[in-house]
Length: 353
Ligand code: 5AD
Image: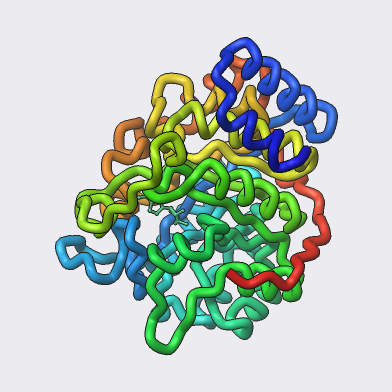
């Protein structure tokens, strides 16, 4: 599919045409992936972050947020909960927090691997190669790092560099593949200043990266951030700004599935936040094959405020699993029994943002 066709789908006004895109994406998913939906438990281990991303509620400049860091025993307890809930893996996610040391994370990974059958995905931002290697050696299989946007100018504007550390997400993706990780990435869609054209390019780049997982979600404004408060405005000419809508997330999901028949595509919490009623179901029917369920203890979950009003604060904490299974069954699918994700070679070309 050429960029022009991607763009046409992103802008397609005819609902009947769109349904044909969605049906096609669902067929591609069914023929290339197992029918089962993978359930992955999200464990938010620290909301400390040294970065200043202009959209994110965890940015270090935000002073009115209580910060937390989970203990090793707390993380392991969450992983045990993931097993009880029938998850095939867990994602250990956090801000860019240097106090989550190489050794500490490696120990946690080793314990979870020793005590559970779970696959482990780490999502702790850009870290030195030594840390990444140590975590891979400790047994983590996958690493998730979104590049957010391939528009270099927009990327730099919303991701200020720390004095000693230049932001280089694509360079880190390459390092991750070199370390032997299965690599996940993705974008935010609807960032103010993000055009339809740049998202078409994002879709091409996500495809060129030969990823194991692609997780993308809508941008949701947080009032305590430069973009969300309206301090940092970027206005594109009329008709060029891509919306942060539910509809556009489905188009993105379907296009990514058509271009990446065997990639894991989760439905994200941000989509479910936009449509708590059936956003996840529709995502799963339009190309996605994985669901992330939040397993962070509620007292911490409230503080992991990347954007406000997260779905995981509106749904029952520990009942999430049964309700989720019901949702998955309601569309004629079932939850995968265990971790059966096959390793895939990630071959990341050297591209710099
Ligand atoms: N809206 C949507 N997603 C966000 N993220 C951070 N802030 C927001 C927001 N305001 C996402 C980014 C990041 C991940 C940790 O959370 O894509 O990679």
